[in-house]
Image (cartoon, rainbow, N blue to C red; front, side, top):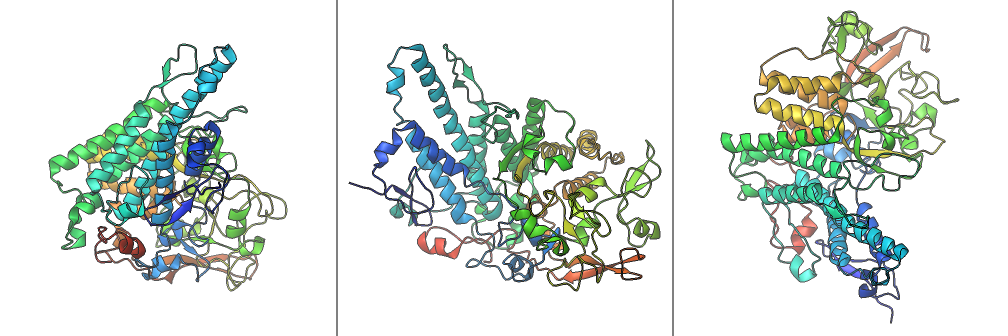
Length: 602
């Protein structure tokens, strides 16, 4: 008899699960028990967990999360991402409602973990021939490794939920609808501890190896790209250490140690630690510091040796600084969505003037005495060198040129697309052409060389520079200002960037300002900004202020004209501080699970 293989998510939706296809109902001749004993079929269950790792290229109705922050605007005014910007999102309509998707991934991980111990390898184990014993050892090793990969992925999904919703229900086994109805949220502290404990399990595990003696081995710190490497993209020990670093950084930050923003919320333990004493906070910062340093030491790269643009091109998955990423199949979807309107694209993500202004400008000739300062629209020299490249006086931070496409410069070098952009009013890429950029800029980071050629796009989840800045932030909070400054400068002085070092100071507020600045320009469009400004609790002055752009005019209406740049307001933005630090839990799930309490003021 044919049977349906399924499991239940917290949303109460019954999803069919088979070894053949995912996300649709498939009738199969195999029973659940037959699938669970098969090495090949259970491996497909793990693949379905990996599928739930999301990239951030166009996942919010065609937009990036950057367009819901002060990093960018989305060209399409009807995109759902605009609901974030005008404040119209709610528990029924959330443009980034990932609750169901991540619980689907969690449920898949739970089902996989419940299946691995049932895999039957007796046909190899009981055969004494060397070839069959070799297969047994390899498969036994892989099955055990898979378990820890699934535990990492489940922990990662939980972190993605926690950073959006605070404490969430912790489900570690498959559940039925009767359990869903009585499900409650775990506290924030319980969720953080669970994620960290799962990371530690992956970091510390020693799995019986594939040699005859089955010598225990740890997961590799990273998988190194070679022509024959088949495990690139799998969870590594470094990925688990990076997740631990990030979650402990968030756990120590202001948002999760200050429930006062929510007013008289009846369940503060769901959105914050309850012990927010100076002693407790110091312990959290120390844990964050220790986690970051442990990865830095284990990774064996005390400086950043990859060039900045190489971490975002079609071969970025080969770069040694990429700790973990999601590699997509070759497409040109991102190029079609984001190339300029005059170069066969749809304009997509328009970087803001708010972001462009954050890239510093150099003062003085290249050399040890050179400094860098904030760009100043009231300084005629700055405005005259608004997009100046290079290492000399008045040049901007090179990450501006690597991340953002500007007027009168090339976006790409491919034939037929390598002209200088004409973003001035009346130009081929500027207003008033319908769907031209609304800010005066186009995105460059992650763009491959042409919109009519497919290529690999890898979404970077953890980069080594993040760990350096995580460590700098924790060290600053612990009063270790010299070390904090050192690690900021390690990011600033990577090959091809070589920005002047930040000045020596013992002012923690100034060092924190520098960290905020550095994360902003280093991680632009990488889905950090929305969460950084929340955990620092500076969202009202970043997400709740007008988004700015630039209006460009040419003296003769041609690329050869003298360009005049005028800063403009593109649109107002809304951030309601007593509720928008966290997402609302979907109302449909609250209706299904009576024990789930809504987040503050939603």
